[in-house]
Image (tube, rainbow, N blue to C red; front, top):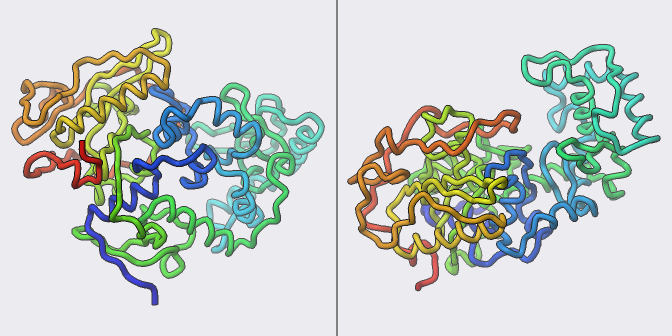
Length: 443
C-alpha cells in the first residue's frame, strides 16, 4: 500500500514551487528547463512577451535569449505539437497516442468518432496533402489546396476551415508534423522527417510515463475531477496519495520532491498567465489563496488587474499581479500598477522592483512606471491608489481596473477562473509576510 502524506499549505506550496523550477536555484539551461516542465504552451499574445519565452525567462533569467528557443526548434531538439512544445525525445511517448487515434486507452469517444468519420470521408484530400508534402514540403496550410469533399462544420472559427482541420487531425494521427514557422503560420511536413526515429513506446507504458513526468512538473495534483491533467486517474494515477491541511479531498504527490523541502530557498518571480503554477485556477486558489483571471477578453471597465496581468511570486506565496505592457513601437515597458494581495514589506518591494527592472532590460525596453513601489512596511496609500487592497483600504470602483491597451482576438482559450464572476475579499493576515517564513534569504 502506498504511503500517504499530509502537508501544511506552506509545505504543499513549496513542493509546487520546487517542481516548477522557481526556487533560487535556477535550472542549468533551456533543454533542462523544458524537460523539467515537460511542456511549454504557445500563445501568440505579445502584450509583454510570448508565453513560452516568458516562462523560460522566469526560470533562466538573463541567461535566456529569445534566439535560444528558435535555435532549439530549428535544430529539432524541441518539437511543436498541438500548440505545445516538447523535448524531442518525448515524441516517442506521444507517437504511441497517435497510433491509437482517434481514441486512447478507453477507445474513441463520440466526438472522436465524428473526427474519424470526417477524415475518412476526405481520404482523397488527405492523400493529396501527403503527396504534396512528400514532393514539396514543408508547406503552410495556405500552400495546400482545399480538395475536401465534405466540409468541416462547426459553430466556431474553424467552420469550413477544411485544410487546417485536416492537418490537425493528420498531426494527431502521426502522419504530418510542424516543421517550423513562417511568420505565425505553421510549416507542415511529413512526420517521419520531423520526429526522431526512436521506437514507439507501447501505449499503456507511454501513458504512465507521461503522467509520471507531468506530476513531477506539478509536484501535487488532483488525480480526478476537472483539475486533473492525468490521462490515467484513480488508482492508476502516478505518485503517492496526500492531503493538504484546510483543503478538501486527496492529492497525488511526487515522492521525489519530498527530499530537501526543509532547505527551500525562494525568490521573487513574474509569471506568465499561462505559467503552470497558476494555470489551474482552482489549485492556485486552494494552495496559494490566489484569486486570478486572465482579463484580456473583458471590457476595460470590468478589469480588476489589467489586460495581461502577470502573477507575482515571492518565496512560496503568490502575492499580487503586475499590470504592465511592452510597447515595442515606442521602446517602452510601461507599468500601470502593482496589485498587492498582501501588504509588501520593504524586502518584498525591493525584490519585485528588481524583477520588473530585469524584465524590462531583457525585453530591451525603457522602464516607465505610473508610480513607484511602496518602499517601507506600514505606509498607508491614498484611498484610491491603483492596485492596492487591504483591510484598511478595500478596493473601490476606481482601482478595480487599469486600461492598458485594446483587446485582441484569436488567442487560444485559457482555463476558466476558479470562481467565475466572483470577487474574493483580501486575505486577512496578522501583520506583513516574514521573508524567513517564505524560505527567502535574510537580508
